[in-house]
Length: 290
Image 1: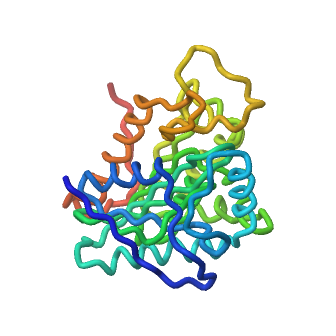
Image 2 (image 1 turned 90 degrees about the vertical axis):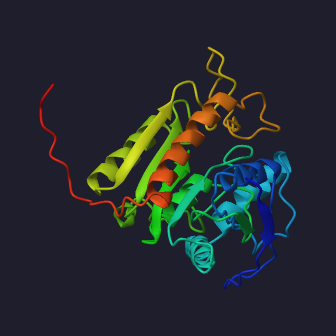
């Protein structure tokens, strides 16, 4: 499928300049668009910096980490709301929206939040993100009742309530607001979201009645590394790279990336493209039979 790319300026309370588009983020967006989706990638730090993407280096990482906790949580939410509204305003949108996000840089890195309705042939770039907590932002984006599906890659800071200015977000408390279906993907050796943190997220989703799948990939750190049989020391917490196909420190794993992307495609195809109708939502009674 051939795709077209365009920019759309959307006014926010914070305002700022447009697009921060790194190579890995652009390729991920194009990969999704190539399956017949309209993809909008909003810029997360438009109020702090210009359109040039932050570099995959020490200074760029420090800058992105600073922005992540300098930006207000309500400003993140506004960006997500406006992105969804922009998509739903397109004549090619069928009215169904899915979201995904992951970190793609060093340490805790960049956000890539892609709300997307289906059947669009055009990639509309309503901004783009570069750094920080993309899985967490996709999680928060799912609070919007217009979102039918979400795929959150290694969502940072949910368990510690530490996103945004003041580092006291309410994401876990609001998990019950998620009405669509959600996939959570983590690495078993993720030093940013430790086992007790992942257990807390899973337990909360169960208690809040969220429809979700939860995957923990063996041998994987924040983003899956090179697949060797030796687990690197977790003191090197900047081991981010399973999807990032450049400057990945040897940790880019195309096979695991493909597996995770197939999960995304299955969920989006079933919830955004099919005509099965809305999920019934009732709890199934499981019979104890063989």
